[in-house]
Length: 325
Image (cartoon, rainbow, N blue to C red):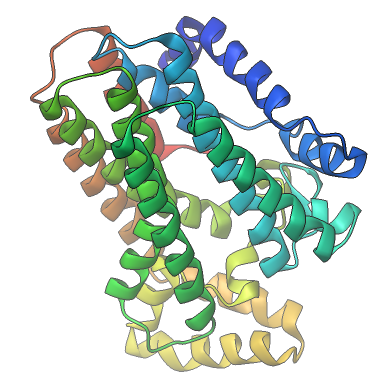
C-alpha cells in the first residue's frame, strides 16, 4: 500500500515527533499529565505532523524548527478533540474512553486548555512572526467554526454553504496550516508556501467530507465510536443536507431529526434517519464532492518540483478522499 510506504519513509521523523509530543505534555501536576497522555497514547494517524514533515522537504530548514511546528499543530488538534468530546458528550474516541468519560467534563476542558497552551509554548521556539500570525488566525477561525456548528445543531434549513464554511474552519484550515507552516519552517519559497497551503485546504475539505460519510456508514469497531454520532448530536453533515433537499424524503427525515432532538424514541429515530440518508444518494453525492476537492488539491501541487515528495502528497490527497478508516 502506497500510504504505508510513505509512513515508512518518514518513520524516524515521526517517531521523533512522537517523543517530542510526550515530552511537551509532561507536567508537575500528575493529573494534567495523566489526562494528556491518555489521549496521546490512544494514537492516531498523525496526518498533520506528516503534512508538516513532507512540506518541509520543499525547503532546507532546521529539523528542530520543523519538528516544533509538527508538535505544536498536533497538540492543537488534540486540544480540539478533548473539547469536542465534551460538546458531543462522547464516551469513546479511537476505541478508548474519552478524557471526559474517564474523568469528567471539567477535567477535560482544562486538559484541552493545557494542550493548547503547550502548543503555543512549543511554537514560540520559532522566531518567525508569520508562523505565529498564521497559527493564531487558524485557531481563531477554528473556534468560530465550532461555535457555528453548535448554533446550527438540528437546523434543517441550513445551507450546503453553511456546511462547507463550517468544515473549512473546523478541519481544513489546520491541515492547510500544517502544509504551509511546514514550508515556512523550512524556509521554502513563497510560491511553495502558497501552493502547499492551498493543497492542504483542499485536502482538509476532502478529509472531513469523507469523515462525515464514514460516520454514517462505518461500524463502531472501525470508527472507534458509535455510527451516526454526528446526527445524534444534531450535526447535519452533507449527506443529510442532500437528503433534506429531496422533497420525497424531507418530511420523514425532518420528523426523525426532530425526534432525535427531543429524545422521543431517539435510538429508533436515529436508525430511521440513517436509513433515509443512506438511500437518498447523499453518500454518493458527498463522495463526488470529496473527489472534486481532491482534484483541486492535485492541481495545487502542479507548480511544485516533481519528485518523491510531490508524489507522496498526491497519494495522501487520494487517500483522504476515499479512506475507509
